[in-house]
Image (cartoon, rainbow, N blue to C red):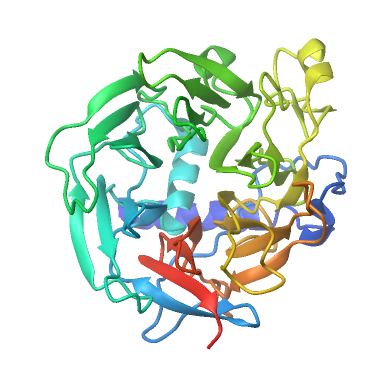
Length: 438
């Protein structure tokens, strides 16, 4: 009987949420250097429009852009979410999901959000491991698979500096000794620094990238709420990118006001750090666009007080006009509620034109927009000055079927160093490889 009541309540909440409001603009209107930003729309319940997770039918694949092809690089993984390619071509896959966080989302709203995430495919326990995939014969499919590191705590980002492999768990940054060609690391990782975690830990993913000379690490730490509703005291050190000295663990806030930064990449022409950021929810299907942006040392990007520059969010208490006045406008919007997570710049010898110069963005897909947005990999063209220059283009689509169900959800994207782009699909349990068409 309790299960029946739960099912009825969930169905009621989902139907009410989905009926709350619908987008009045196209996703393209909320994309580019100057996205349209209509007035916020408040509803009794947030718009809830989930693409239920189903996985891929036998023989089905996403659809790749003209001039390219897609194959499954590896299947039957356990919630593959993030990728890293070692110098010898081995591919590391973080098989991971959210850790236990009992303080996150209490009450009716919290219960609803947990059910939403479960329906979207995010309710499975974390495998807490990194798996190594090797394509020894270079045919575009990994034929060797080993458990590389196990016993982690919701791992996400990875970065190699010399023989030091850094892994960002949800609550700490670890260092492992790596010998080239190693198939498994057996020793325990040594802590470099603690990261914000704990029983709340709303945005749990932590990414890491190394500076070009390897002397600094940059670590993403998402917010502990949507717009500070859990109290701003719970946001210390969050909604930020940290700069870490791995030699001694000293760190500072490199940039702040970034609600949930995930992807990190160095723009190849300018050497500037870029990030992909998930913006806030629950003020309408057309707000707020997620974005990719260059990251300025000491820059503040608005969260929670304002969005897309100095557009004040009246839900935040207390207000802070001084902080709003400092807010930097992001460089490029990639559509509202697209859940843009992965970020990788194109490399020479990769995909054909028009995907030769610019950034690949993995869009995990919306829950707070009607109709759906995201659920694909896009490409943002850049000019020779290292700036976005043109409309976003689809690279990999077809993750949602004709009935609105998600067969897959793309997350991390990375160049494989052999002319292909790898895409982690955490609902399909697949790593896809996109390459030039045959």
